[in-house]
Length: 88
Image (cartoon, rainbow, N blue to C red; front, side, top):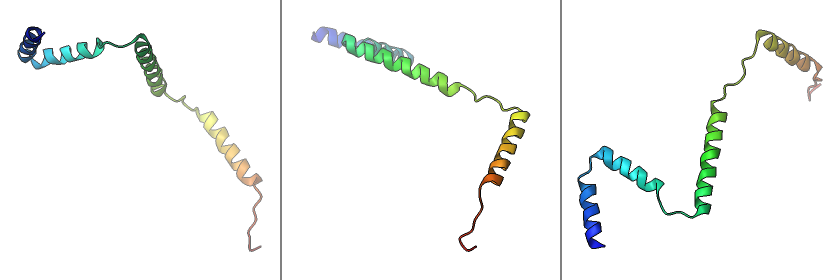
């Protein structure tokens, strides 16, 4: 065990920063995790992917006609609202 640990330590010490980053990513991806843990991680990745897709959706563009109609609706609602003053 100690010999393997020393060999691993030596190999890690001789790695370039890029190799070490790649090794660390590999190590994180190959952790001993239960089947339930892997399924949960898969589900989290799936949900994150779906969330990114929703965030990236662009809102529909509003045409000039829709904008004009909405302005008319707003004006009609303003006129339809009864006005009163507490002091009247």
